[in-house]
Length: 151
Image 1: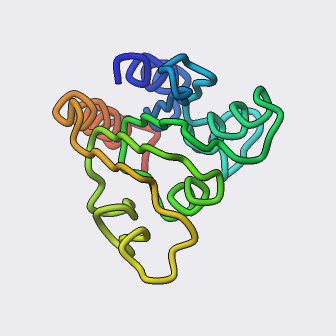
Image 2: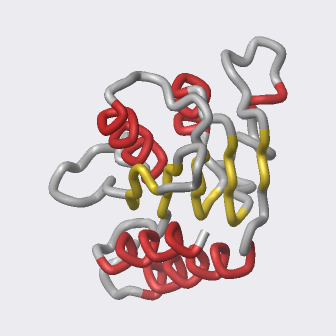
């Protein structure tokens, strides 16, 4: 989670929502890491940290599936990312802060609890360094709301 938090800090420094993700292999070696890149030069709504890390990991491995891999992310994945986690066949999902508004693992659609879920990670661990991950998000949005250019 420390590495994911470091990447979340990079996102914040670029004015992005501070979410970081790290993909590691079965031995715990980092294959890829990323941060949100939604608002930057690419302006892509799919530029979530999880999506970018998984795509890079698959590219590096030269395969479409990430069987046996662990994805660590600072925020509970949204529906788009949770579905992609299934498509990539992630074995273990670890996340920091719970997201009652946009999360789709333990909140909202609870994607993996549904009967027709394509693939469910073998292990899901939420709330890892939850306070730090949550504080990063809260501080970011408080700053955005108090900015003279917001709203």
